[in-house]
Length: 635
Image (tube, rainbow, N blue to C red; front, side, top):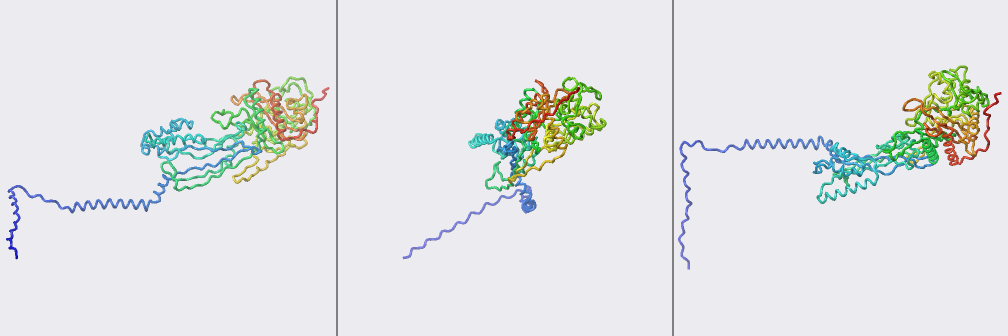
């Protein structure tokens, strides 16, 4: 059955919109929106320009200037560090260290890490300086100035050659600062403080041979003495290490480029440490007892010319330059020029004997006074007329007798002066010793044409010319060596980094006088020490024949340039029959006790010579001295 159909409801139509009210007349033109296309074009053009600029800059950075920017980046990223070469050692002839090196550190910092922009705090440099000052022994203001002088710098040296103990203290401070920064209790102002491995020069024997060795300055270069003279060989060649860094620390995985340093060579001297000690001890004691300005002792091997000891007093400790007396920091034995006095008479006698104008037994009548030039000459003591042999003139150290002997060297005074001058030059007076030591004086020996009227008579007995202590020792070594001068030497050889030892070249030898003259002179010098009338009896050594000569001269005060005080000296060698060693001693301006060379330098000679002979195991003399006559019967 089908349901009946329901009638369809009509669908309602949407309501018609309300009609827009009519625009009143006279209200103006309607508002219309502008065309957006010009603005879009302008914005698009601006963006294109900006992109073009970025593109050009990108091309410039990555293509055109890529290498320059990479280099600049590396400059900021990589830190170059100098690898200091280990300085060679200086040893005595037995290989005992006189100067060596130990581990040390240069303390460095990166100032750019302490700027307010990097560390986000004010006064970081001042804080760092305050922490480091007491550890480094520096003033905080000085350290702060180093840290702020160039704020963009990545490297500055705060202190050089500090001990490992100093670095350990700094490392502890760095750790403490790091812990504080970690717990937000401040900033780590020591983050950029680092170390560079270096070496520090030390002198194991303190002041022993300090005047000879010299010292090393804060830059690690020789500042005096042999350290300066041999600096090129000792210093070696520094290396270089470049590493990547970040925040003042090395990047573990960064590139490292390293050029190894070449160590310096070791230098072996002719010095014997034990003999040097004996010489230094003896001269220091006598200078102190005599309240003198200074003194020096030189010990030389007569056969080879090698210097076995060169000591002066007062000295200094090169390990503590801060407290050293600047006046004592040189090597007076080579740098002092002074009038030698009677030790110089041996050269006048050498000329007289070599020229054949007199012999050791030639008679010389010596008055109490001798008028020459503008003055009257005298001996050290008033005496009646002496009737001496030429040997006696030397033994009693007569100035008048020496003048009379020197006058026989030529038919005229001018000819005699020229002959004497020639021999003095042959002995090395007025010339460098050949050692090449820094500041060495060659002495003063004017040409005869420049001698004053009185100088022509004072030069023969050692006044009016000057020399240094090594030159004086060399004169006596020349006589001991049979009249042949062997140039003094201080270096036996050099051991390179490869361990190979290169001996020093043999020193030149020069014939000064003949062997006969040297033998006669040696016999005469023995009379100075052995004869009861001699002036050098305090230099006697039991069991050994000793040849020597005393000296007491007026001294030129280096401050005023006038004569003031005396120079006391003694020079000699032993054993006289088989010469092995020469010892020379001089003391400047003794003010307490005797000022005669035989009295204060004779004992020093004996003490040093005895020690050296025993040290070198030199056998005693096997014969008696000749004992030449000192005087003759004037009746």
